[in-house]
Length: 308
Image 1 (tube, rainbow, N blue to C red):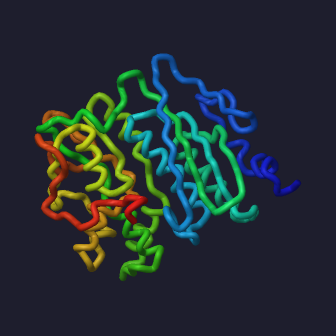
Image 2: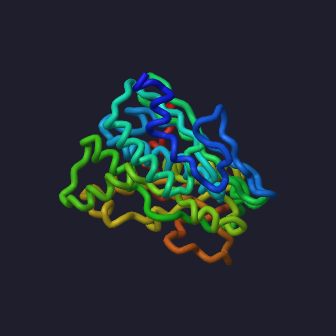
Image 3: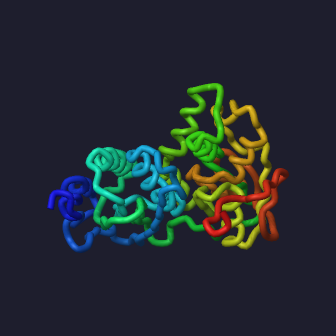
């Protein structure tokens, strides 16, 4: 059966599973991984649905790349070293050109993150991707959302709001006068970067960390709840890219940075004496109390599947 499940796996996904931690990958009933001595295993799963997490006309290569990076960002937030990933792919039909593009994007993301494809599943139905990532850290040397203390500084990597702007551009809701800026924002949605190297560098330095997937304010709230502290954010300190700053509607640009989500940057807390990593910005502080406060508070603080 040329387009059957097993021939599909053999043709498009076998060969993406080589890695130092993979003993047995695609082709057996289960993957077999080697976990380094004295390490613990970290596992996270992320599901992406068509017309929910990405528009249906997003190129297949970008769907694959984006889904891997979104899942890998959870490893970055734990400070974990990438080991392998599992992919469950649901397709309405087998289309050769689409699958070739999808595999190209998957291969690029696997190479960029150091996450070989160790296994997964394929089935027929509405288009969806579920990526499970596995990583490791030395015992008791991983990052968590709990642990922030009053007096810590609140810091973030990269720039915020770009992905939300890029999605609005892809959906035809926003247009920009500068083609280069518009393309840069599109790329930030379609091709995000999981901050894996930074996450590992923050082990033993950051008191708490989380990746920004639902929006800065929403994820800061998760961190505050887990650490049982309050967080104050200064909107003037939030880093915006040149592309986003070129938007005529500066208030909308800030709303995207505060609540847009999908940037997959790291939000973390540092003691007053810790050095700020390159490419990161201090945007607020940890205080006694609970919840988050910011001088600009949009009506919607971030994305939630059951309220949107």
